Image (cartoon, rainbow, N blue to C red; front, side, top):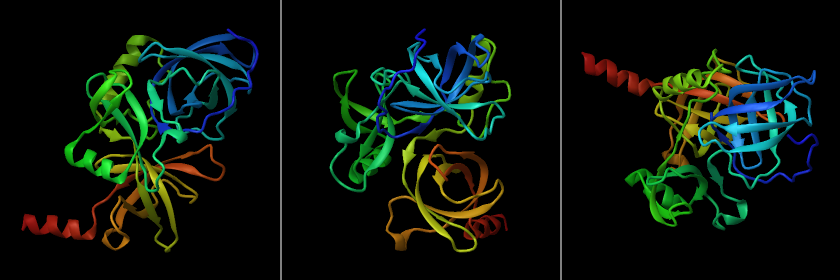
Length: 296
């Protein structure tokens, strides 16, 4: 294993809140070697945020293997997260060879994106080979994807145009497993199977309006969405259980409606002053009235 840190320039790419099972090998603060099965929380082209129970020094070089595809790469420990939702230390790491697609996702470079405003960034998956890509779609392409559940585009792996669908984001940080880090491959497989049974979420970055009960407002984007919830990052200091209202989507402002939601979890983001939040969507008063009326 390399014993020095490399000055590798970070690439600008979209982040994805994605839980990927990984093996981390390195040395702790006492110089003792460790080998730990654990998982990622956030990934991008240049690095990620991972969970590791052993304490590490900033600048330390570790080897990470993606257990989904067995690709490995060396990373440098950048910092320890100030807070941990799982109770286990969380670490920001930088990839020392960003050309290796260790996460099994191709992150589209900013220069590859269409030169226009209003792009929707989506985690897509090739229907034929399961190749994943975080890419920017035009509004028209995104609406077509929603309407037909797929969009035609070239696949680098298939080397032909293929149908691409929404990629499902694995179980995220709002339900940290108390048994992780796992002690064996079989334990990890059992945990992954349990996660698959939970609600599917899609890696979609849609425009998001946030309004607090006191009238304070902020605009952001979703990190991922599901039928009953969403994840986002914002500058508000919100607490678990706090209520808010969200507006999600591409409709004109006069066509959008406030959806009540409640904060279920909070995690500090690496962006200064911001935090990730998981929110559960609640029924509006109109929806509650309709349900009551249907029972009478």
